[in-house]
Amino acid sequence: KGMPFKYYHGRTGVVFNVNKRAVGVIVNKEVNGRVLRKQIHIATPHLLPSKCQAQIISRKQTNEAHKKAVKAGKAEKTCLKRVNKQPKAGYCYTISATPETIQPTPYVDLV
Image (cartoon, helix red, strand yellow):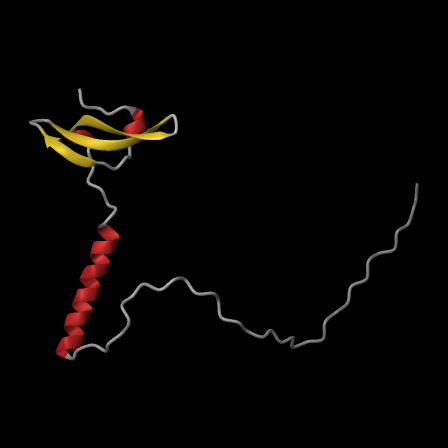
């Protein structure tokens, strides 16, 4: 009565129909190496809104607020583009004390 089959749990789809107690959703399903567009009806208690765009929308809002502040003269202009994670900065390691050499123990056959 509206509980989707276990394959569809957590899947993202597009709404194509809205009923009194269910929502029609188009979901892609891979069957034998090909992708089929399945139309399923799911009861509204089993639906969750997608969070795919949440990070993009929040980043756009902060960027627009920063642009407004720059135009008003309250903030300094900076690059708002996303930057990939950069490699760690290089450094030189200096030894303060003289290194101690450790010798292996000689092999003794006691058997």
